[in-house]
Image 1 (tube, rainbow over the protein chains, first blue to last red):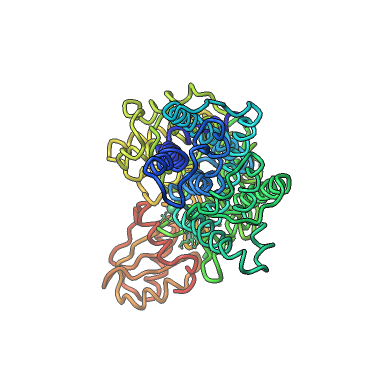
Image 2: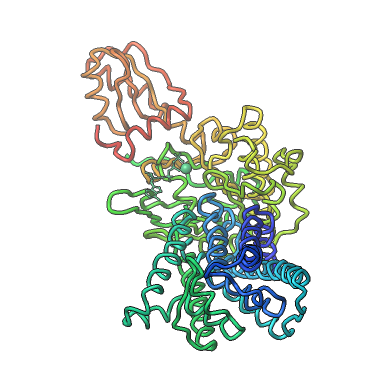
Length: 277
Length: 325
Ligand SMILES: Nc1ncnc2c1ncn2[C@@H]1O[C@H](COP(=O)(O)OP(=O)(O)OP(=O)(O)O)[C@@H](O)[C@H]1O
Ligand SMILES: [Mg+2]
């Protein structure tokens, strides 16, 4: 099993798209949280200008986590799709399976390797965010108060957990569609259109409420809300906008964990049953 | 007529100096694979490959070779029938631990080097990494092992596929048209490699549509056509089915009489004065007497030296329906 994990780590590590996605996500997180926000702040007075306080070290965790429930999620959904879906395009499943690992072992190795690689999707943006907030605080002559270690740890854990759930979503879509293109399309369409549109209308149409409470988006934002999420900012978060309803952190965690479990079990079931040509 | 009855089913284990272990390495019974209602890719196939033999699995495009190999490896499930490979159900890790396989086109991660591809596979297989340089050397790919797979030529990809199949130093090697895309020198090297591998009691199942290849390296051959095994035996057995050519006049009458005789299989008209008659060539003079006795002028009878190719074409043209004519 450890050997299979090393194999999958090698695949992810040497795959250029892994690093492209990490770079892209780090860039997005840095821009939305800090660079764009700070430039907008310097230039004055739009409605959506983020208060300076959000960009200071004390709000590091809350500000960075804003991006994970949707933007980060969609990016690592692509990583999950590529990890599983690439095998179909290249026909490499047959090559791997004939070497003898159980299909369930290949699945577990891929998921664990993804989990390991996804730590960098939290650590790198957090490091970059920390640097930027530090710089902004210096420039503005503001206090440099870092969040407590426990808040940082919980923030990293929550961000990582959201990434893992979205990546597992990508895995299911990839094995069901036996490829990458359709899976990425469907994943983004779902996140953007279904969850996005329905969430936008939820305050006007009350029957939608229980539906949206089951969304990845609602549970994602609810999971990070206790860490100081700027809910007002999230309302205007573009395609990732969310106006509630929020559920408790525990409920959000449970629902997301159930999603993760369901995604992995379904992926495993499909892989097991699927004929490999 | 049934070609399978023509084949003496022993010989092979003995010819390789196999000390009594005539064990079946591959055994299928009634193996069938259907795709939808119409396509029967493999039908009621009983395949038996013994320890230590190089078994040629011969068939035209679409005959069902690859489909059979996929079932042997557990990549696809049979619609019905049973399979044991090395005594294990197909696709079980215990069996696969001793099988090396290349099925259809070699498939690898394009962005990884040849070496890294083998690393990934060795890790999944639980094989020592020190096998990698050995197998790369065996397929003559060592000097390009550091290059990305996507930059490989067709033949280099094929070589890497064979290298991956050799990685576990397997007891059973299953190769699906392994000389695909190789240049003549490469083909000949590959055949030597397979022949050498087949020494010391290891087993090879080699699918091919190249008669010359099968003729050169296989101990025993099975011919598959439209999903069915239509003939099986040593290369010589199969060639023996060549029969006789007869120049006779009037030809139609000769044809009618010959086809009614006992022990005569198919009778074909080759050109305006020659028949090809499927019959044991030792019966040439008997056949001659019968024809002359019926008032036919026989100007020539000679033994047809069938190449495996001719046999194969003859077999597959008529498929399983040899009785029809
Ligand atoms: N996944 C599939 N769906 C439908 N039909 C299939 C599938 N796979 C194979 N077939 C059909 O099964 C038959 C046998 O195919 P197979 O690939 O086993 O042939 P083959 O003997 O390997 O031929 P070749 O020499 O061209 O490689 C063909 O008619 C093919 O169209
Ligand atoms: Mg084939």
